[in-house]
Image (cartoon, rainbow, N blue to C red; front, side, top):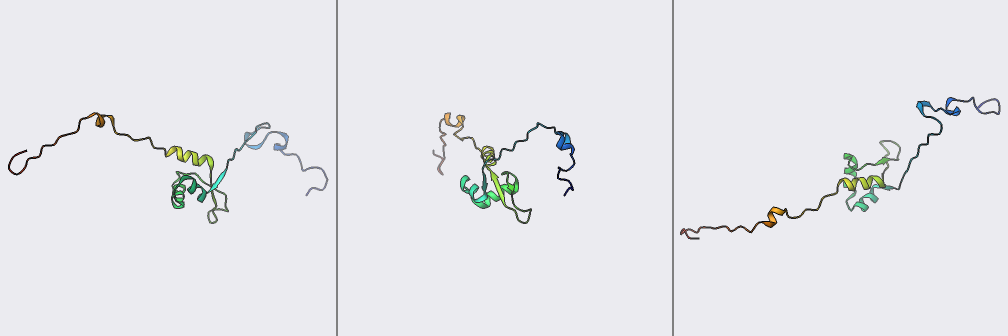
Length: 117
């Protein structure tokens, strides 16, 4: 591409200061865990594939499109997203409310046709 064998002309980002205010020595780290296909997510969560697709569509389960755009979508769900989804859907255990369990059973008097109990 260049007539001489030397490198291309030195750019600003080659000298240490990167465009957009980044500086040399700043390290960007992406920690990518395991990615699951939607059927694997359905099996892991114990729900149907349609339910997983519904959660992805409404945004309660975050998925990443690794396909080629909207037409050729190929969705993956990261392990962290599954954990966040499960954490957000956690239900507190339900027991009998204390006031109902402490109360004595009710006795209901029913009158018959003759006026007796």
